[in-house]
Image (cartoon, rainbow, N blue to C red):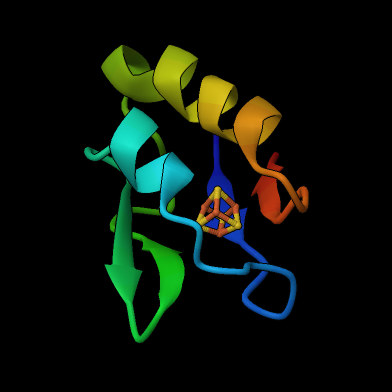
Length: 61
Ligand code: SF4
């Protein structure tokens, strides 16, 4: 499973960083991903972050 953040959509609310700190981190008021391939142990929280993102900026492949 791969994950990325569309930085044009991200409004920097920080929700994904709170929900899934293993994958997301804030940088310059935007969320970025620490890794592009999500470890199995973090898949559920990464999916939850996608569902919670208010602007649907998290893309999972
Ligand atoms: S939840 Fe969405 S809008 Fe908020 S910081 Fe994460 S990617 Fe950006």
